[in-house]
Structures are given as C-alpha cells and as structure tokens.
Length: 155
Image 1 (cartoon, rainbow, N blue to C red):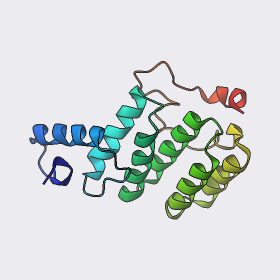
Image 2: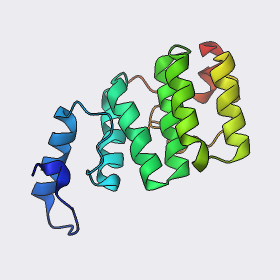
Image 3: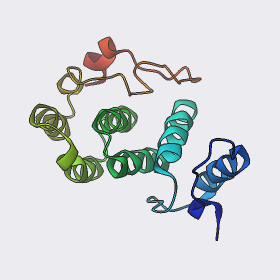
C-alpha cells in the first residue's frame, strides 16, 4: 500500500497528507484514482502556481476537479491549461473539454469549444476566473501570471 491509497479522514494526520503530496509529485500517472480528491486538487493548484508549464500536473488537476464534481475549479483548471498551451495541443484541448462536458453549463462549454476551434483567448475572458491560479495569481509564487487584459495579445 503506497501513500496514494491512504484515506485522509483526520485533519491531524499532517504527515500522511504530506506523504501523499510527495507521492503525487513523483507519480508518472495522469489519473491518480485512489488519491484524496480534495488534497490532490489543492496540491496540483499550488504546484501549477509555482511550475506553470508542468503539463502532467495540469491534466491531474483537471481530472481531480472532474472526479470531485467541482465545476468552478474545473473551469479554472481548463483556463490555466489553455494559457500554458497558448493555442497548441488542439487534440488535448478537445479531449479535456469532452471529458469535462457533463460538469459544464452550455455557455461555458460553448466558450471553451470556440476557444478550442480558434485559439482566440477572448472567448474565455467572459468565463469565471476565480479558480484560475495563473490569471488571478491568488496562489501564484511565479511571475508568469496572466492578466485578463492580456488575452487579446495572446491570440
């Protein structure tokens, strides 16, 4: 049994939570099915704020948000992935949008699909950005944060 399969039920189990974060960091798997969803989502958000170009962590964060059923955090994770890819990786973008579809409302889904088709960042500017760590910088320790006004320059 590794640390990814240890259930985290008590808040005083800091050492186990810390071990899970180390396991997530060294794991090569994109989908960590047995990892604690809340802890994985928080860890991956913080890791992305520090290392924005780590693609594997972006995908994990999206999967954790899907597994948790957290639509606002899913939108933030998708936007962060799109910002890092800067119009590249259309197949990956379409795949994650397809997998996220059940959790997204029609307006959000439409904006994400338009972005996927055109790579025009103006389509995602109207989306809720409060959980995008690269746009609002609430968790960021990196100078690589984005300002929503810069979306036009990215296109």
